[in-house]
Length: 309
Image (cartoon, rainbow, N blue to C red):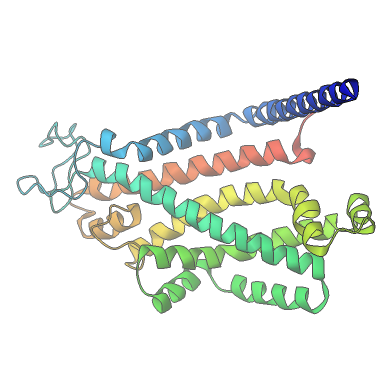
C-alpha cells in the first residue's frame, strides 16, 4: 500500500513538473514571436512606463493637479522665454501645472480602458457564445441587434447614450462599452462556429457534458487568442472615445484631469498658448500608438498563421 502511494505521489509530481515545463515553453514561444516585432516591444515599454507613472502619480507629479497658482496663468514651457523651472510643461489658463495634470490623467485613461474593455469583453463573450452555440432564432436575433448598433457611427451612438444617461465619466464608459461590444460578439460567434463541430467538442458532448460546460469550459478557451488581440485594440479605442466625449463636454467633467477634458478647456487658447492643447494631444497620441503596437505584437504571437517557422 505504501509503495502504491509513493508511486502515485511520484506520478503526480512528474505530471506537475511536465505541466510547468509546458507552460514555461509556451511562454517562451510567445515571447519569441512577440519580440520579433520591435515596434511591439517599444510599445510595451511605453505602456509599462505609463502604468508605472499612473500608479506612482502622487510621487512623480511635481504639483497637485487641481492647485491654481494665481501668479502663473498660461506660463509657457521651461525652455521658452517666460518659462519657469517649477512648471516644466507650463500652466493652463487658471494656473494649474500641465505636467502634473497629464500624469494624473494617465490614471483616468487606464481606468477608462480597463473598465470599458472588461464590460465589453465579458458581455461580448457571453452573448457571442450564446449566439454561436444556440444558432437558429437566438443567433439571428442577437446578430441583427449587433448589426443595428454597428450601423451607427460609434461616436454618435456614444453621444446619444451619454445624453440619455447623463454627462459623466462613468456613464461615458458604459456608453463606450456598449458601442464596442458588437465587435466582441461577432468575433466570439465566429470563433465558436469554427470550433463547435470539432472532434474534441463532439467527444465532450458524447461524454455527457452539459451546454454550460461545453460553452465555457470546452469551446471558450480555444477562442481566446483573437479576443485578446481585439481587447488590446479596443483599449486604445476606449481611450480615444473617452477623450472625444470629454472634449465635447459629455465625458469627465472639470476639474478632472482627464486628457480629453483638458483639450476641451484649452481649445480657446490654441493660438496664444499652443502648449495647453499640444501636450494633452501628444499624451493621447503616444498612449494609443503604444497600445496599438502591442496589439500588433500580440496578433503576431497568438495567431499561428502569422508565426514564421
